[in-house]
Image (cartoon, rainbow, N blue to C red):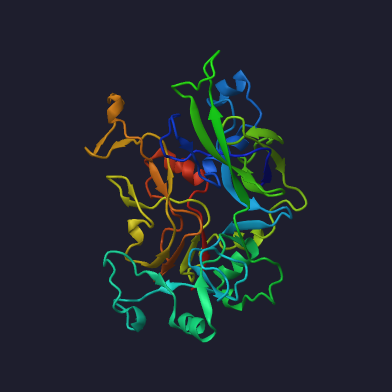
Length: 405
């Protein structure tokens, strides 16, 4: 397996699923960090071009296929790997810390637990009157011990910053977060704020020979992202066994037109700091009942209607709780006419085309708590009839890391 450093040379913009057309007051925004498939195609563009003889012999395209990809992940200037903070973690802060913004001045870290409001002998009486849909798992809530500590020590409960060191994510998955204190941490900080800034870029197209803006496509605004100095992405790209081709270092187009990034092979060390401890948690040995979503996953709630949810329907009876955030909407023109419930044929009138996301991805950092380990250990639909699922598997969408309660 080979890891690569991807360093942006300019601002980045990765368009999301929202329709956009240049007009008065139009803002083009995007998703950040980018989806795996976007970075994968950028790296793949550095593979050497094949000759016409190679293409005839292998019946393939102009570049090597059957690649395996994992990433992208954020790294700081020191090469330390940072991953999304688990959504079930909460912090206790001093009372003088503002409630509207997460801070690094936390005093202790805890994890939410399923409320156990029904069907359980050890249900928490503090939540027994909580009304919640019976066809969904119990909500993830604070424990009584956490609530008592908050009152006794005059602290404030709040969320942590959005990124966590990979080293401590491995400790979290081994249920060691109660040992974290500001004085005993070997590496600081434990959490980190978003290491990028938004950059608003207006675009104005003037009429030729006049001092007026074009009426059509004349004005729009892009909201791009600029990573802070030293921060970069890392990703792993594996070539097929026996392949003599190598990925060349160089500059790739990443995201919108004109946005570039430098790609270099990681050496000394040849993998991100903190990855080795996490790599051991990619498989469940049968005794781990908590799963952390490492890469965006797809949870199919209804196969016929292609509706996506926070967790797949196969897990419904086995799931004790789920802590997640809003979904990542991705895609262009929908392949389904949602109103009529019929697949598109390609002959529809323009006003019949549905400019809505094709898929809603479960965001990285989502955490699942299980009653018993599930049989399926990845967050992707189990249907080999769809070619795009094979692509998602090769790109390691829905990768889970396994932890204990």
